[in-house]
Length: 465
Image 1 (cartoon, rainbow, N blue to C red):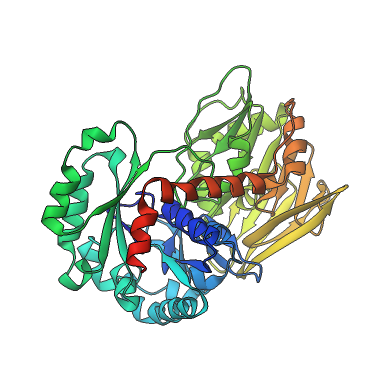
Image 2: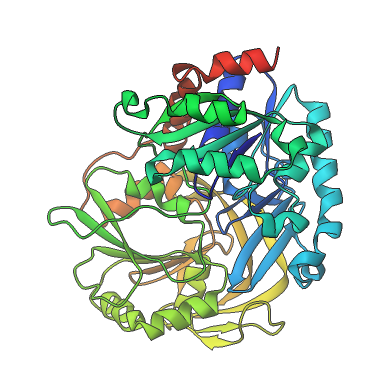
């Protein structure tokens, strides 16, 4: 089990690396995270919703992603509210409960999922959340030491050494654990290291003398193209001579990993836009999905970015809205059941009206688009009705266009090389798009090699017998 001293210590990355390492050794392995909080979600082949990180980890393990790998998913849609997804489906009753009252309702799903995976696979690589040292959350814990104790997992505690203070983080976290929890910790991992290892001196020996726990791996900082679990670290500014695309990062923006194929395309510069600025110099504008579309739209108006979007549309710039991004480009968003934050007029750039319905649509889709086949997934409460001024952009009610403004329900669309080629060609880009699935596959094999290169594999073999 991989636990961290902090959030963003690299737990998801290391679980993916371990899953691919074990899979390459011929081990039947599966990932597991009891509870994830993220608006980056994925849809399993059977139409259930899980965290994007666990979906990727399943691909790393070369197994079909399934809901047991992430039985509880929390999707924030307000400062003090998260939509609770239980075994792949939105549970409004549990979502309405206070945080501390949820554990008794959620633990049975966690426990059953964990034990069924342990029964079906040779190895399960478990990911914790945040830090097990958050003593204020111990009462409601169902993702860290509660899971480790349930299955007597071998725990590896990870620190992000690039932040500084890693040895204090490791020692302090270990000291916050109860004795039976400390006994499960088999090793410390220093992640995101850069520089000369000699600079560490005898710090690892110092740490082991105080805890009895060895440091088993020094994992280097590496650049990679794999999706983040819930953060968005990419930064950029417009660059002359490149294709500059504005990606609007309003509050509750979701599934931002689907724009990675654009971010890593040579000659393309994706610029996150979070606050008021001119959009006149951009070649295209993308509005991502949102977990609270009305609030995202209010933010755009607050920052006067709605006016910038309209000016760009009038100037003929391509504008692409995905899911919630498409909904807010429409005429009207209706919320009769109060699922998000009330009715609101849209930007009026697409002749569409969307009504939020209680039942969420979650499914993988493959559609024919001209001579090509496009794959992706749907995650939305919205039911969208087109008016006379839009025409079909994707079949089966998955997308519309009105001049240079496009809206689609299909997440993952830009992971399709054919669609990405078409989109970028409109902007004057010249080149040939890559098979993004092949890029991800190559990256998983590359990070798996870190397990052996750091010496961690040898320690794992000793612990596992």
